[in-house]
Amino acid sequence: MPTPASSATWRRPSNRTLRRFYFYKGPPETDHFYTTSLTEQRTVLANGWVFERIEGYLYTTQVPGSIPLYRVNRFTLATGDRVHKYTTSFLEVTNLVAAGWQLDTTAGYLYPQATPTFAGGWILGLRCPEPGRCTGPNSYSNFRDYYSPILVSANTTKLAGKTRQRVSFRFRSPDFFGGGAGHLSFGAHGRLYVYTPFVDLLCPQGAPQTNCTWHRGAGFILYSDGCGICGNNPQMAAELFWVTGNKVSGPDFWSGPKFQNNREYMAELVVGDDGLMTVRITDPSTGLVMVEEARYTASTFPPSSPFPSELTGYWMAFATDASRDFTFYVTNLQVTWLP
Image 1 (cartoon, rainbow, N blue to C red):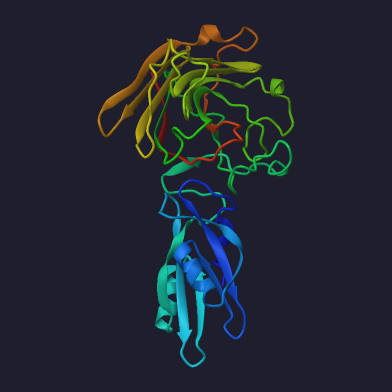
Image 2 (cartoon, helix red, strand yellow):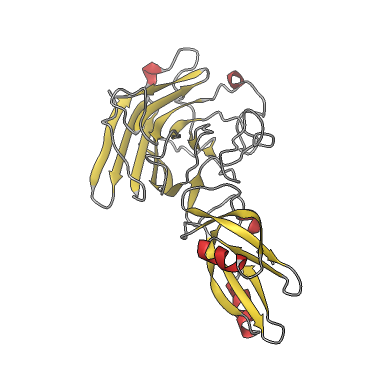
């Protein structure tokens, strides 16, 4: 019996997942058997089950927001029949065990819905986005089955006397850094143009970017391996957006930080009405300051699309990157205004 959450099983492999093989055994022992274990595969094939297909991919260890997939079985001595069931509900497991079933194992871990979430934070990543974009020459078919929302706020409350917007958060990833091409954008004191029907308050679907005069802001980019146009090839660079373009700044601003997977970092971005941007990244576990830089950005913006001193939004977004798959966790997000 398939699990109710099987729609959240990945269709394509990614880091830390294994193939979930589906086997079937016909009458008189009618059974559906799923496993990621090569040893179990050999056992069931030797005992009458037939391989049908790869049913998807399961995490081998629990990741934030995922839940266990339990496997139970029941053996009927009179008929020699063994049947397996799969469920994400431990209450159902308890009821089945009380009815004579046996808990086999935790078959793996999956998200309870196609777009995963976890308490207290967000997951950034590109999986299989807009309708029609998962197939064809411009597809994102290398990605998994969900589209993680871009975190965008068009406006925040700015009280009298406040001039600097502060965005702080913690971040970590099991597989983003050092994993090939890819980058993420973080910005404030502006608003980001993104062409997608799934995010509110952005350009209408299909609208030219030049129609969105509010596409402006200041922030930074995190790179997976390093910024190839930034001189010393750091994993961070400043990025300033305006209506018809952007500027990525490298070695004169960043000192070439090298971030590690499975390690948490604290980020603070402050952008003032005057265009002064400061960035501080620290490693809370060691107290090490990875980045601490400041720059006036207003003069970089062209006269036709000046620094957005009037805008109060912020964003966190993945790049349009069709060559790799990663997961990036953001927690403890706080957005405030300072004098």
